[in-house]
Amino acid sequence: MATTVGLIRHGVTELNSLGKAQGISDIPLSEEGTKQDIALANNLTLLIKWKERYYTV
Image (tube, rainbow, N blue to C red; front, side):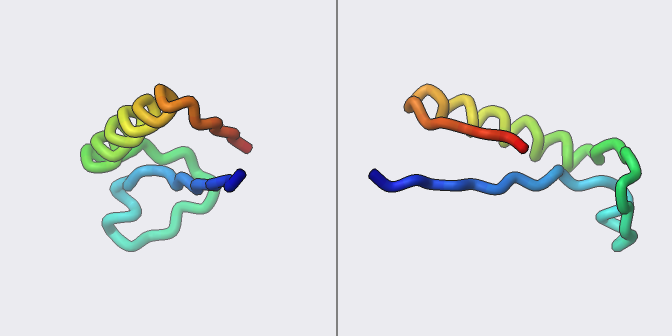
C-alpha cells in the first residue's frame, strides 16, 4: 500500500507580498491568505470524506 505525504505552508501575509521575512512573528493573513486558508480547508474536507489520513506536527 502506498503512502502519500503532503506538506502545507501558511497562507500569504502582507509581509510576504512585500518580500519581507517574518521569522516567528504571528502576522495575520492577508485577504489572499484567508482565501487560501478557506480553499485548503475545503479541499481537506473533501479528501477526508475519501477516508484519507492526515497528521499534523
